[in-house]
Length: 615
Figure 1 (tube, rainbow, N blue to C red):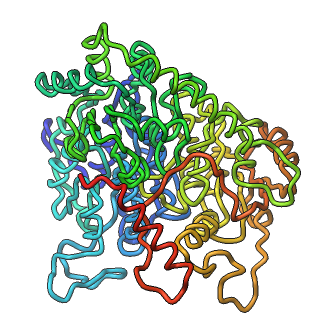
Figure 2 (cartoon, rainbow, N blue to C red):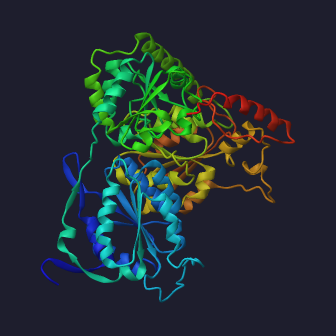
Figure 3 (cartoon, one colour):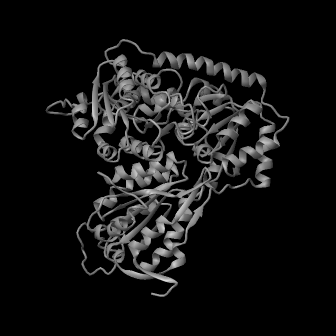
């Protein structure tokens, strides 16, 4: 070994490289990797496993219970860190690796950074087929890990130890790029993990990654500013990019200075405090009446850091002004151009600050601003009615949300799939940036508890409340064990409506018969009676089963100081949702059916399609 190189295995080189990647948070240099989640198997235990052991005092390794769960936790860590820090996940080959593919898709859709390090087949191919290897009869280069290709921003298979040098550098560039940000997969051939190479010492130099802020192009900026200057009924749609660029202050300044109402996507909720008079709340399919009324009339939409997915746009039937112009303020060109938007490719904060300076003297029509504020007041009355505690046998999701809000108003709420995201989007009163954590880009059942763990690891001093339905709980609950092992206390509120209540309602709304969603409507021999409190207790959690909203509030107050994860179970009504607000969503209804309910739903569907914008 020369003085300019150091001989390490490929796995040791990966581990050492990760420890030397840093960032700056609040003026302090900190590791950019918050840790590594690992489930070891024959494809990584001898290579990456041994390497991680050597750095365990510098970079923590967390043992998980499920590969998808640990990847969800890692992704939630990055989201809760506003993409400034992230984690890595390593598995064996085969089923361990493939269990992470769903999580990779989640990160890809949501533009969230995570480094996947799955084990792979032998590069030398001598033991083929090795245990858990997928064989392609027509392509000897294919392995199960090729499934990561379409759901990774960057993918590489490491078949020689020196290949990790450019691969890791490229990985870091993608993970820290505001536009390209997303999952990176480096498939590590298991024999190569153990091979040694003389790596240049410079490869392990400390590297500090900053937050790049893309400035607006002059021509794009002039066009966008001119559109706003001619707007009569402008609105802002705040997406996740507002939070990731730490642009909440700039957004507030802009809204207040120019009187522009702010509508929030799922990812952008908490960009403004819920009680700000210009925060109209959620927009779209799960929107408030305040937001959606304005969106229907808006002539200019300043869409900041949003993908403009169908729930935000009401399947592109929400905006009804024939003269509508959309300004796409986004770091990603792909998103900035959507639906013939005027692109303003820039960092959200930089773009807002530039617009703040350029629009001096302009003001939205005061009547428009005052109408928005009045609509907000009306919505708050309806929302408070929906969340109020009432003495009913089976409370609604909204009533449970109200109880959690009253008992834990300063908590971070975490959720993902089913009917709860819609109700939370409308009704949760997020007081500060990041206090609302929703995975609704991929709407992944099973994210909730694992995601809560990731949030708690990123924000250990915050109270984290996970809200989850019985369906998602049954899909993936094992990271309760991890939360207890790591001392990462969660409060899990489990709403048991005895089935997939959200999809049952959608089934009914599209004319379908109640079938295979609620447990009582399945083809069963024995109807299960699941004791969720006992199940969670068996994993070491503190548990309670409550019978009313009043009991739920009391339990939430009494367990706030508990020393470990607590699961509180409450039975809920599977059919009740908040009637106020919301918008049509395009779910195709069969054109031909023997059932009159479906035919009626089809007629309503065809009528609604006429309101969709074609471009």
